[in-house]
Structure formats: C-alpha cells, structure tokens
Image (cartoon, rainbow, N blue to C red):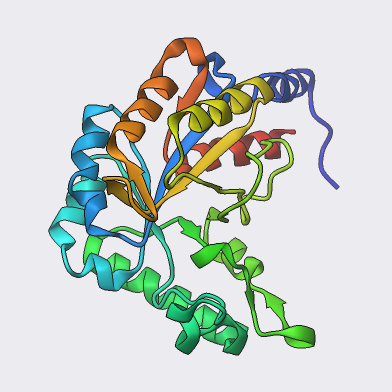
Length: 260
C-alpha cells in the first residue's frame, strides 16, 4: 500500500492535474512520420529545421540501412527515432501485406520481430528506440478465438506505442501510453489541422499527428506548406501548444499520471 502524500506532494499533484502541460501550455502536439521514407529526409529535415520543429520518425531498419548517415544526422538534430517493427506486418486484407498477414502471426513471432528491429536500430544508429508505432495502427495477431493483442508486448518494451486513424487526441490524465491515439495527417488541409490543434488546446489534450511522405500532394503525403503552417501555428505562443517529439511528451505524461 502506498504511503499517503504530504501536503506539498498533494499540492504538486493537484497542480499537475489542473495544468498538466509545462510552462503554462494548454495542450500538446507531436508530429510523427512512419516507414523511414526518403522524402522525410529530403525535403523533410530541412523543412522541419526551417520551422524550428522536432518530429518522431518511426522506422523499419531496412529503410534506415539505405541512408544510415542521414538518419544519424536526424537523431543528432534532435528528432526522435522510434521502432516500427522489422517487417511491417498488417492485416492480409491489404494486398501489400498478404504474405505477411497479422492473421497468421502469434505473439512469439511478434516478440522476435520487435526485438530484431530494436537491435538493428541500435547497430545502425547507436541509439535505443523508446517509442513504437503499430504498423497500419493494428494491434493484434491471429484471428477469431485465437486473436491476441500485442499491446502488452509494447508496454513491456517501450515508453509508448502509437496507433493510427483514431478519432481523438489523448487525454493526459487517462490515456494508455502503450496505445496512444494517432490522427491521420496525410492529405489533410491546414484548416482541419488548425481545428484539431485548437480542440487539443481547448480540452488540454495531446494531439499526435501521423504522416508518411513529405512534399507534393499525393497519396499518403503531408504537403510541405501545410507542414510549415502546422509548425508555425503550434509554435505561436498565443496558441498555448507544446510542440515536441513523442518521447518528450510521453515522459511528461507518465510523470503526471504517477503523481496523480
């Protein structure tokens, strides 16, 4: 049984609940990108530097191996590198994943895949990922009566796990760090991104945006101008938002939840 809080601890916990974000901020935003696609390096890194923003890149090792020096430079510049599995398994209902379908996987196979990705990222980039993103936002292996969630595997290995195509930002007082809500960012007009950020600030939530390519308008791409507008708006002190990589915000949320 936990020891009772003294008055100072109680007041600190109450203050964290009343104003959960640092430096008087009202909400949080994280920019995340999946798959280690080349456009995230060119033009992505230069755009983020211009916008004074740091993002979280969830990578699969085979893509990092194509340009390891550039990904090391991204990490050195303050961007976070997260784990996105070794083989990117998704439901077999997607044609690209038919031969690597989650419906045919079990938990031991997923454990091997996760650990292999972490080991390769360590070897390639000399860092250990603490954040994870579920490929396709899917969190299960198997099917029917044998279907099992692999969220517990993520909770054991990582500070956070991020979903995809969810419909809400994260409430810091209740969210499960092992399954964070992720909002699709690709092809989203800035008016809609603006609306989502305003809701996060108004409700004290953490908005995690999920993109893939960066550059011209196309399928699964965040337009360069919209990325710049997003960063400019989130960085404006008047909006009351904290723009930071996933791990930074997750550590803050974890400390706040423990205090509460």
